[in-house]
Image (cartoon, rainbow, N blue to C red; front, side):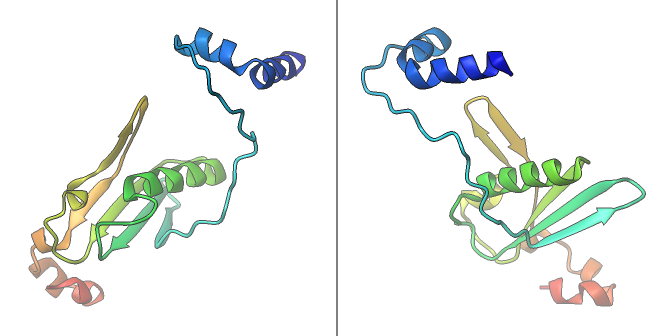
Length: 143
């Protein structure tokens, strides 16, 4: 703990020196941000626990491809929160309900810097409606 506190002190009081050392860049304008991260509530569309597999299934239903924050970032946020809370595997699926040609409906991962997070994407207009017509519970998905 003492090492952690010393390191935090150095980062807060000498941020340019740490930026230079850790990232290899010289900066003249720098701001130290508050270290407390906001954990505002977020709500997934559907969460299901497969008890025998100890796995969470998350389904997000989208009518529009655009969202704020972006869908890939939202999926990462959901995954992190679920992993922290339940500490078990999480499988995520985004279901696009309305036809679109937007490239966002074909995006199945967040790639930013060293961060990569993937999820499945289902586009309803590409699905065979017969599978939905054969099951009364899935009938509303038949298009």
